[in-house]
Image (cartoon, rainbow, N blue to C red; front, side):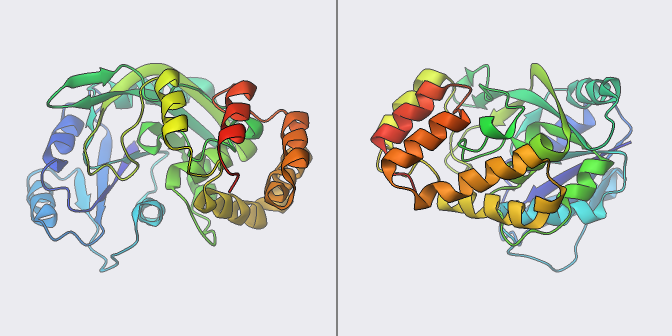
Length: 302
């Protein structure tokens, strides 16, 4: 059994495409648990109609609204009790083999505790078709390879087990995004498997909560220069990482705890000492130390 947790908000234009893609899955032992964050465009009425015609769809109407995307997905976890969990955005379209492929990878991994499976996605919109064959360009496995991403691996591309659900359900003081928290917890307290295969269309449009995703390292480098007036580290991600550290520090491996302490101390250093520390600790950006150095040279730190 797989629980698909869908967070919706003003998604009336798109949500039925995604719900239809669930119904086309080759793996059929799933249920879709949906929570709406206070839509005003008819989304809830569409969801209620789907609940009536297919019992696998469950709409949780608990009166809680205004959570925002990160807390909304965390809120949904309380309604899940299946062995495996997937998050779903309201506006993507899953390929018919997505659940089956990811579940097979998860079962073959034989996780000893908390575990996450990630797949890839194609960037797509109905006007242009496929914009890029890959959304995720780099697969981080360690803390030093993800702290400078200002993100996690796409949450809607993840499947995780009940042990990981238990960890991520523990409330933190603040969140940047749910996928950022999931990746932090996966690289420090879990195991990760990557399926290097696109298994859904990641819809690109002006309403994307996380913005339009660049489809190549070259585009990311161009955006790095274009957005050179923004900081290397976003305050929201720094504060979310600090909240994660404060909550879990006694359960972290010594190496990860010390690495986080170093990362959290970087804003208080002068530029030269910070650059030296980043070099010494071998932090990377998209697997590249040089890409991180370029970013550090053209942007303010935080």
